[in-house]
Length: 487
Image (cartoon, rainbow, N blue to C red; front, top):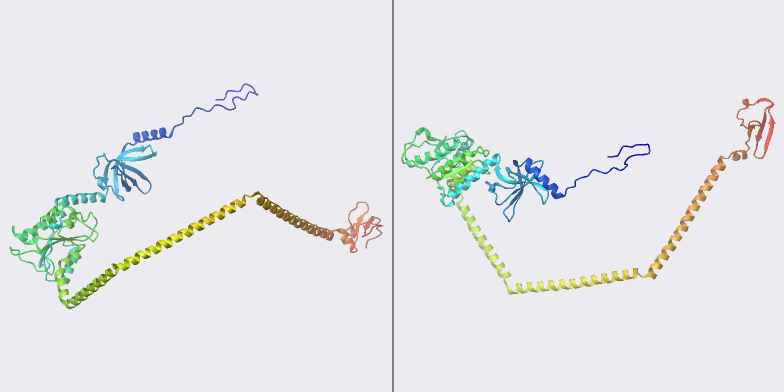
């Protein structure tokens, strides 16, 4: 602080000492930021989309959690016990729990992951993946247990909703392709709470109906429109069961992802066809079933394919036979052509010609390389000669003298041009002055009359008085006069 002045000449301390300041190193500052973050935030949950996922050879997992406005670096160490580690994939939206800290070596903050969870539809997807892995481990998806469908089914069981679009699509295709097919329809819900239990019960009901384990309630088995109601007796048999519904979201199709439905399909003694949703939809029932169809209409086409194809086959047998014969001849012709080409390629003379051509290419390449190197050395030699010539004093002095003479010549020309310009300007100014000079006017016969006393120019005759003395200037000399009258 400056001291108080005591006189008009005491100005105090003009340059006071600066207060002491604390200067931190980068490491000290980073350590303080790390302690502050860990103390104030600590363990927290963060949600976002996974991107830039990479797994190091050490087993540590690094990824970035981002949203529309920012991103956060995350690390999952190998020794950290975290469930659902496998759901860490690029593009997935996750909720991540971890400790917020600072990686001091880079000076950036990051989240050390302690837990990972899916969000929204992702939770259903996670449950789907878990059940899928469980059932696959138990062998429910094994290809060897899947049974082929009968080629010419005569009676099938249909499990679906009586009010959905799936049953209309199935019946429409069956009437068009195999109207004689008999359908045993068991209605059930295909969406909502309790739908999975109803679907499983319908599958078991059809199996009990086939094996006649216990009498069936006639009201629970219905025939579709246009089909014949079959008497429920021990001799009634089913060739397959069609389990179907229309498309929808993952939540809408969730009944077909329940374990109870998968177990019922697996325990069914009758082959099961699963046709749930659209082509892009896959459910657990599709994996357990003996056959999976992309849509309900596709399932009906698969079931009726044997009879429908047989009719077409019988109608087109002759054309089919000719096509087969022509195709067989074409294949044999292609095989013969290929064999001849292989024999030609394998001939020793061709191999020798290829080696000779390779030798020619190598010789040409060697000649080009030698020529190129020779030109390169020529250019280097010329450059060296030019550089040596440029550093010789005599030549350099000669060039400087020539340049000086050229500059002198250009200076003289420039001075002459400038002098000529000034002379022309002077002549023009003299001409203008001569044209504007009063003497030039007097040369043409004019005169200038002034008051002899004041020297003012007389421009109006009414302004002079009798007896006033005047002076008139002519081209040569002046005339003095006295005013006697006004004209």
